[in-house]
Image (cartoon, protein in one colour):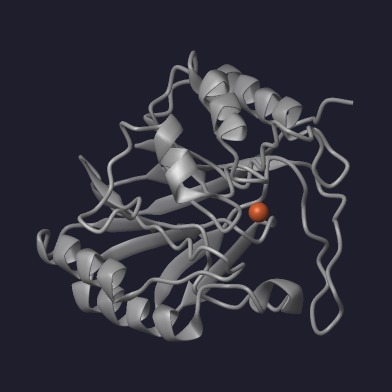
Length: 256
Ligand SMILES: [Fe+2]
Protein backbone atom coordinates (compact mmCIF):
# COMPACT_ATOMS: atom_id res chain seq x y z
CA UNK A 1 0.00 0.00 0.00
CA UNK A 2 1.32 3.41 -0.98
CA UNK A 3 0.43 6.49 1.07
CA UNK A 4 1.46 10.03 0.21
CA UNK A 5 2.02 12.15 3.32
CA UNK A 6 1.81 15.92 3.11
CA UNK A 7 1.97 18.24 6.08
CA UNK A 8 1.74 21.83 7.18
CA UNK A 9 0.31 23.25 4.00
CA UNK A 10 -0.52 26.52 5.86
CA UNK A 11 -2.87 27.94 3.24
CA UNK A 12 -3.87 31.54 3.85
CA UNK A 13 -6.55 32.81 1.53
CA UNK A 14 -6.71 36.18 3.24
CA UNK A 15 -3.06 37.18 3.12
CA UNK A 16 -1.56 34.88 0.53
CA UNK A 17 1.99 34.61 1.83
CA UNK A 18 3.26 32.72 4.87
CA UNK A 19 6.88 33.01 6.01
CA UNK A 20 7.47 35.03 2.84
CA UNK A 21 6.33 32.15 0.64
CA UNK A 22 3.17 31.36 -1.31
CA UNK A 23 1.64 28.23 0.27
CA UNK A 24 -1.02 27.90 -2.42
CA UNK A 25 1.51 27.77 -5.25
CA UNK A 26 3.72 25.40 -3.27
CA UNK A 27 0.87 23.02 -2.53
CA UNK A 28 -0.20 23.21 -6.16
CA UNK A 29 3.34 22.22 -7.18
CA UNK A 30 3.34 19.39 -4.65
CA UNK A 31 0.04 18.03 -5.97
CA UNK A 32 1.34 18.15 -9.54
CA UNK A 33 4.50 16.33 -8.45
CA UNK A 34 2.42 13.65 -6.71
CA UNK A 35 0.20 13.10 -9.73
CA UNK A 36 3.27 12.97 -12.00
CA UNK A 37 5.45 10.69 -9.87
CA UNK A 38 3.18 8.96 -7.38
CA UNK A 39 -0.22 9.02 -8.98
CA UNK A 40 -0.67 5.33 -8.16
CA UNK A 41 -0.85 6.07 -4.42
CA UNK A 42 -3.80 4.52 -2.60
CA UNK A 43 -4.24 7.37 -0.17
CA UNK A 44 -3.02 10.88 0.59
CA UNK A 45 -2.93 12.21 4.15
CA UNK A 46 -2.33 15.88 5.07
CA UNK A 47 -1.07 15.85 8.64
CA UNK A 48 -2.45 19.13 9.95
CA UNK A 49 -1.86 22.86 9.86
CA UNK A 50 -3.93 22.73 6.71
CA UNK A 51 -4.34 26.48 6.98
CA UNK A 52 -2.35 29.32 8.51
CA UNK A 53 -5.34 31.20 9.87
CA UNK A 54 -8.14 28.67 10.32
CA UNK A 55 -10.46 30.79 8.19
CA UNK A 56 -13.31 29.41 6.15
CA UNK A 57 -11.85 31.06 3.05
CA UNK A 58 -8.59 29.17 3.50
CA UNK A 59 -10.41 25.83 3.87
CA UNK A 60 -12.42 26.67 0.75
CA UNK A 61 -9.15 27.29 -1.06
CA UNK A 62 -7.95 23.86 0.03
CA UNK A 63 -11.22 22.22 -1.02
CA UNK A 64 -10.91 23.83 -4.44
CA UNK A 65 -7.34 22.60 -4.86
CA UNK A 66 -8.28 19.02 -3.93
CA UNK A 67 -11.43 18.90 -6.03
CA UNK A 68 -9.78 17.28 -9.04
CA UNK A 69 -6.97 15.53 -7.16
CA UNK A 70 -7.31 11.87 -8.16
CA UNK A 71 -6.16 10.23 -4.90
CA UNK A 72 -8.46 9.83 -1.86
CA UNK A 73 -7.46 12.34 0.85
CA UNK A 74 -7.68 12.30 4.65
CA UNK A 75 -7.26 15.63 6.41
CA UNK A 76 -5.91 15.99 9.96
CA UNK A 77 -6.00 19.10 12.13
CA UNK A 78 -3.07 21.02 13.62
CA UNK A 79 -2.71 23.93 15.99
CA UNK A 80 -3.23 26.50 13.22
CA UNK A 81 -6.58 24.95 12.30
CA UNK A 82 -10.09 25.74 13.52
CA UNK A 83 -12.24 22.65 13.93
CA UNK A 84 -15.63 24.32 13.34
CA UNK A 85 -14.52 26.22 10.23
CA UNK A 86 -12.86 23.11 8.85
CA UNK A 87 -15.99 21.01 9.36
CA UNK A 88 -18.16 23.70 7.78
CA UNK A 89 -16.18 23.34 4.53
CA UNK A 90 -15.58 19.57 4.79
CA UNK A 91 -18.88 18.38 6.33
CA UNK A 92 -18.38 14.81 5.10
CA UNK A 93 -15.38 14.42 7.45
CA UNK A 94 -15.78 11.65 9.97
CA UNK A 95 -15.67 12.70 13.63
CA UNK A 96 -15.78 10.73 16.86
CA UNK A 97 -18.62 10.80 19.40
CA UNK A 98 -17.14 13.92 21.02
CA UNK A 99 -16.71 15.89 17.80
CA UNK A 100 -12.98 15.38 17.39
CA UNK A 101 -11.69 14.74 13.87
CA UNK A 102 -10.66 11.17 14.60
CA UNK A 103 -11.35 8.16 12.41
CA UNK A 104 -10.01 4.83 11.25
CA UNK A 105 -9.47 3.27 7.85
CA UNK A 106 -9.20 -0.50 7.60
CA UNK A 107 -6.95 -1.59 4.76
CA UNK A 108 -5.34 -4.82 3.53
CA UNK A 109 -2.25 -3.65 5.48
CA UNK A 110 -4.11 -3.20 8.75
CA UNK A 111 -5.86 -0.37 10.50
CA UNK A 112 -4.88 3.26 9.98
CA UNK A 113 -5.85 5.51 12.89
CA UNK A 114 -6.16 9.27 12.52
CA UNK A 115 -5.99 11.38 15.71
CA UNK A 116 -6.95 14.98 16.46
CA UNK A 117 -4.35 16.69 18.68
CA UNK A 118 -5.67 20.23 18.19
CA UNK A 119 -6.29 22.03 21.48
CA UNK A 120 -7.79 25.40 20.60
CA UNK A 121 -5.68 28.29 21.84
CA UNK A 122 -2.51 26.25 22.30
CA UNK A 123 0.44 25.75 19.98
CA UNK A 124 1.17 22.47 21.71
CA UNK A 125 -1.04 19.42 21.25
CA UNK A 126 -3.34 17.47 23.56
CA UNK A 127 -4.92 14.07 23.53
CA UNK A 128 -7.44 14.38 26.35
CA UNK A 129 -9.12 11.47 28.08
CA UNK A 130 -11.98 11.48 25.55
CA UNK A 131 -9.59 11.19 22.62
CA UNK A 132 -7.40 8.58 24.29
CA UNK A 133 -10.49 6.59 25.30
CA UNK A 134 -11.67 6.56 21.70
CA UNK A 135 -8.21 5.40 20.60
CA UNK A 136 -8.15 2.60 23.16
CA UNK A 137 -11.52 1.33 21.92
CA UNK A 138 -10.37 1.41 18.28
CA UNK A 139 -7.19 -0.50 19.16
CA UNK A 140 -9.11 -3.11 21.12
CA UNK A 141 -11.35 -3.75 18.11
CA UNK A 142 -8.40 -5.12 16.13
CA UNK A 143 -6.24 -7.21 18.48
CA UNK A 144 -3.05 -8.33 16.80
CA UNK A 145 -3.75 -6.38 13.60
CA UNK A 146 -1.04 -4.09 12.21
CA UNK A 147 -1.76 -0.46 13.07
CA UNK A 148 -0.33 2.83 11.79
CA UNK A 149 -1.09 6.08 13.60
CA UNK A 150 -1.24 9.59 12.15
CA UNK A 151 -1.53 12.90 14.04
CA UNK A 152 -0.21 16.45 13.88
CA UNK A 153 1.88 16.88 17.04
CA UNK A 154 4.85 14.52 17.52
CA UNK A 155 4.71 12.82 20.92
CA UNK A 156 8.52 12.82 21.13
CA UNK A 157 11.09 15.62 21.51
CA UNK A 158 13.36 16.15 18.50
CA UNK A 159 16.14 18.20 20.10
CA UNK A 160 15.04 21.55 18.65
CA UNK A 161 13.92 23.55 21.67
CA UNK A 162 11.61 25.89 19.75
CA UNK A 163 9.60 22.90 18.58
CA UNK A 164 9.94 20.68 21.64
CA UNK A 165 8.27 23.35 23.75
CA UNK A 166 5.06 22.96 21.72
CA UNK A 167 4.96 19.23 20.98
CA UNK A 168 2.23 16.91 22.22
CA UNK A 169 1.78 17.35 25.97
CA UNK A 170 4.34 15.02 27.60
CA UNK A 171 1.70 13.55 29.92
CA UNK A 172 -0.58 12.78 26.97
CA UNK A 173 2.37 11.40 25.02
CA UNK A 174 3.13 9.01 27.88
CA UNK A 175 -0.50 7.86 27.96
CA UNK A 176 -0.47 7.43 24.17
CA UNK A 177 2.68 5.33 24.38
CA UNK A 178 1.10 3.02 26.97
CA UNK A 179 -1.93 2.42 24.74
CA UNK A 180 0.10 1.84 21.59
CA UNK A 181 2.55 -0.51 23.27
CA UNK A 182 -0.32 -2.43 24.91
CA UNK A 183 -1.75 -3.12 21.45
CA UNK A 184 1.51 -4.81 20.57
CA UNK A 185 1.48 -4.38 16.80
CA UNK A 186 1.75 -0.65 16.08
CA UNK A 187 4.01 -0.49 13.04
CA UNK A 188 4.55 3.24 12.70
CA UNK A 189 3.53 6.69 13.86
CA UNK A 190 3.59 9.70 11.55
CA UNK A 191 3.34 13.35 12.65
CA UNK A 192 3.71 16.82 11.18
CA UNK A 193 4.16 20.12 13.04
CA UNK A 194 7.95 20.40 13.06
CA UNK A 195 8.40 21.33 9.39
CA UNK A 196 11.34 18.96 9.11
CA UNK A 197 11.89 15.33 8.19
CA UNK A 198 12.66 13.49 11.43
CA UNK A 199 12.99 9.76 12.08
CA UNK A 200 12.71 8.39 15.60
CA UNK A 201 12.47 5.35 17.78
CA UNK A 202 9.98 6.23 20.52
CA UNK A 203 9.53 3.76 23.33
CA UNK A 204 10.23 0.90 20.95
CA UNK A 205 7.92 2.26 18.24
CA UNK A 206 9.03 3.52 14.84
CA UNK A 207 8.04 7.15 14.35
CA UNK A 208 8.61 10.01 11.95
CA UNK A 209 7.73 13.65 11.46
CA UNK A 210 7.21 15.19 8.05
CA UNK A 211 8.45 18.33 6.32
CA UNK A 212 6.12 21.11 5.24
CA UNK A 213 5.01 21.79 1.71
CA UNK A 214 5.61 25.49 2.49
CA UNK A 215 8.33 26.64 4.94
CA UNK A 216 10.95 24.51 6.70
CA UNK A 217 12.46 24.88 10.16
CA UNK A 218 16.23 25.36 10.37
CA UNK A 219 18.12 22.60 12.15
CA UNK A 220 19.22 24.33 15.37
CA UNK A 221 19.86 21.62 17.91
CA UNK A 222 20.06 22.66 21.54
CA UNK A 223 18.87 25.90 23.03
CA UNK A 224 19.16 28.19 20.02
CA UNK A 225 15.92 29.48 18.63
CA UNK A 226 15.25 27.77 15.31
CA UNK A 227 14.36 30.10 12.47
CA UNK A 228 13.39 29.30 8.93
CA UNK A 229 15.42 26.71 7.06
CA UNK A 230 16.51 26.61 3.47
CA UNK A 231 15.62 22.95 2.77
CA UNK A 232 13.39 22.34 -0.20
CA UNK A 233 9.69 21.68 0.41
CA UNK A 234 8.95 17.97 0.45
CA UNK A 235 6.38 15.30 1.07
CA UNK A 236 6.57 11.72 2.28
CA UNK A 237 5.73 8.43 0.59
CA UNK A 238 5.02 5.56 2.96
CA UNK A 239 5.10 2.01 1.62
CA UNK A 240 3.20 -0.37 3.87
CA UNK A 241 4.31 -3.93 3.22
CA UNK A 242 3.38 -7.24 4.80
CA UNK A 243 6.32 -7.10 7.16
CA UNK A 244 7.87 -3.67 6.76
CA UNK A 245 6.99 0.01 6.60
CA UNK A 246 9.24 2.26 4.50
CA UNK A 247 9.17 6.06 4.34
CA UNK A 248 10.70 8.07 1.51
CA UNK A 249 11.00 11.85 1.50
CA UNK A 250 10.43 13.43 -1.92
CA UNK A 251 11.45 17.04 -2.40
CA UNK A 252 10.02 19.13 -5.19
CA UNK A 253 11.23 22.27 -6.90
CA UNK A 254 9.28 25.21 -5.47
CA UNK A 255 7.80 27.77 -7.82
CA UNK A 256 10.06 30.79 -8.19
FE1 LIG B 1 2.91 24.07 10.86
